[in-house]
Length: 631
Ligand code: COA
Ligand code: AMP
Image (tube, rainbow, N blue to C red; front, side, top):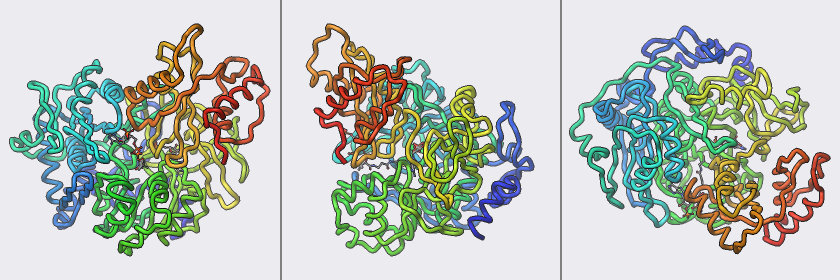
């Protein structure tokens, strides 16, 4: 099969195409309605199919006689632990934990928030929720209590599952005090918290609120899989939008299972029994899709890694893991490879390990810059595949079908639209642009299976945020262009979302926090190029009249505020005082222009600017603070 044939059929006969893919999964009742519209007028996949995602991912493989095959390998250099679980062991642990949740009253449609580090129990908790037909919402461990509280309030979980701590490089992060603080901040209170005690830091449990994971498991009865409809939600995963309120991306069970299973062979060229490693975190969409669900749906072995690409203990960490477990496909963010390159530019560590099983390296989460692409290809000798996707889609929008028809990559491009995605580059009026011209990247409806059909509890936000810019299209929020061969180049966000070390963050949210400081009259937070993390946020701050505060003190206080509200992963480390911000005559801050200045790019002064002199002035101040890139 050629890419062309595969892609064309997916666009011209989407129902035929996806019905075939759906037939490869074990449904309780196979879907007859392949594509239909819901009460909001949104296209939905497999509405009348009946299924259970955890059954498809675990029980089915056990029933097929593959119970002894490895499902999970856990490798934790930060705690010096390794553990392996077969499909049978994982299924039994998931069924038992589902029993724990059931005993707490969790049933179909109930929400469970999971706030856990990268340990196998995080997967167990997610799959147990899925087994009950309930809905999980995993919150990344690097988020501060405030962020956790916002998500708890929105998802209104019956139960929260957590662990006593996570382990970062040489430091133990206690999760339980953060959970307690989040519950104090949240108006919604769950009826129980189940806490896994880890030896690195035992948590004090609160009587009447907290249950000990191990003890609850000892007293539990295993619970069976509960059948759900294809369109029933499997999970809600919050992602940053342009405001302080994160968006709950709601994922259906049916389309998710079908698209993910398909992607494992088509994109990643993975077969049952092979080892797949997504070096991400279960708190992100990459972790949901490619640490948990896709590898298990495809009968592969998934690797759960609690460590970093560097410093745990060195820049050979990735290659050591690939060699130890014969990893066939490695998937990580470009930042990880930039970190390895920085510490081991000649890739001396790579040469120490037998990575012959590793066939392909996949990258996503942020733009893969050509120097990082070139370095990885040159030093590893492996094909490197850049692919573009979002929390909203759950799998790649553009990529390279390595299991069907691999195309020659072009550095800087995420290659071609994946089957099911009718990707178009549009101008401001919604007209398709010719090859080479940059515009908004939009996807013509219907979206393929797995993509969101609403924002949790807020359909209007889904409609206005994604569907109203260009009627008949989903707006991705990214800008870019196609070349004459149809290759897609993703050039960056067109909104105020930034990407720091592959983590999606909202500068709008940071602005709300900075603006809350008593000395601040107005501010702009922009993402500027960062050699390691891709982008880093900086704050430009205007003081209130008559306020007298040392710039250094103010910066420290603002950094602490953002860290406290969002968490350390925001990497908000710089804030400078400016006299005024460049604005349009209608008062809109010219953030794009500020970014161009910081990145040392040529810029043209827009005709709508209120005071052109403000630009030279701010450039001078940013330069004095070393915030203008000289590249
Ligand atoms: N729980 C608690 N804290 C966390 C955390 C977690 N799960 N993950 C990160 N943090 C903290 C770190 O400890 C650090 O805190 P500090 O400021 O007190 O030192 C801060 O958040 C920033 O972390 P990080 O972005 O990981 O920076 P780093 O300098 O420690 O490491 C890299 C740099 C490049 C090694 C790291 O960013 C990395 O591995 N990037 C890949 C990211 C990735 O896989 N993204 C997934 C998207 S697909
Ligand atoms: P997230 O929802 O956290 O996965 O972030 C999605 C955003 O990350 C996208 O909208 C892009 O801005 C960016 N992104 C993800 N993958 C890529 C890629 N391969 N190239 C460029 N940008 C990417």
